[in-house]
Amino acid sequence: EAFARDPRFNILLLPQNVGKRKAQIAAIRRSAGDMVLNVDSDTILASDVIRKLVPKMQDAAVGAAMGQLTARNRNDSWLTRLIDMEYWLACNEERAAQARFGAVMCCCGPCVMYRRSALASLLDQYESQYFRGKPSDFGEDRHLTILMLKAGFRTEYVPSAIAATVVPNKLGPYLRQQLRWARSTFRDTLLGLRLLPNLNRFLTLDVVGQNLGPLLLALSVLTGLAQLALTGTAPWLAALMIVAMTMIRCSVVALRARQLRFLGFS
Image (cartoon, rainbow, N blue to C red; front, side):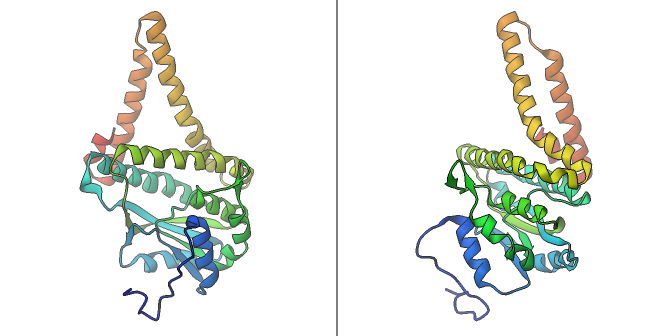
């Protein structure tokens, strides 16, 4: 009600809940600015987010730029603390490396700025996405990013633009969220494979690693359990290798972030 009384705001109320994608498109089509800032409803932006994102958009080749995500409810539970660290890794390792090579592969919805002229040519494709014969109702952020890259725009990451978003504080909702995101990753990776020859070779390595890594880890666990069941011997070498790789990675992150808590992330 407070925002509705402010003449700078135009609040759209749709007749029914039609999902994020259609609500997003309705708002974009009714707005007029050169830049469109997407913010999820459970997210609070730092006061300087727009000032941090806009300079990246000065380059006409950039179609979208995302900020750094943190867990707004980080202190709720052990799970929210882990998710906060997971967000740091996803933003300051994965997204930062992708941006270094010209293409963030998924600009996250809690805080992302789009160029209107880029969006205008993509909205019809974005709205009409189908999966297994039905209109898609998941993976909006990744799909819109893939469309941006297919249209020839770069996507960027701005670590100083901070957005705090609410994360699941119980295991059930967290696992459902991760399953939804995983479905989006695997589906839109197939759509994005044609892009890879035109992007830096690092991004091919990154995409292959993101998709094969979890599958190889799952295969290692299943193979280890089969070895234990059939031979009565534990796969100590494989287990120690996984533990060593985990500890090395978390130690490097602890040094980079200058925060000992990342040692516990392992």
